[in-house]
Length: 132
Image 1 (cartoon, rainbow, N blue to C red):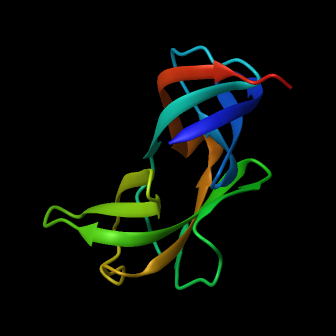
Image 2 (image 1 turned 60 degrees about the vertical axis):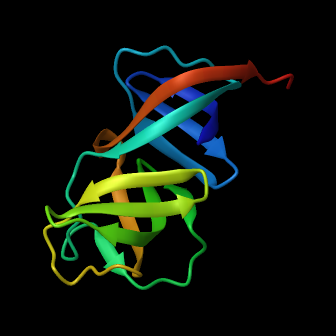
């Protein structure tokens, strides 16, 4: 997925994309304001209905910035036997997650509130600098 960096305060970076905006944690990489990066996201906390996840939402899939956390709205595309879940945000964005709650099923739409230090963003390539 491609994001444009809107704020850098290491180890945290804010971003905007075609699928919303958020704030994430990063290590060992350089991000510059206005630069577009192809990125991957990792959730560093397990999904738990009692703590950070809500099943069934009417919000559009994507990212929503909420102070020092990112609200992630995604469809559970599949769940593996080992508990790994594939969360679809958009055609160009899928995130692997793990859950501790058996009530989450394939086809559920989830709202996940992820603190910025538990939502990791890794650059997989710099695309271009914005002209703004």
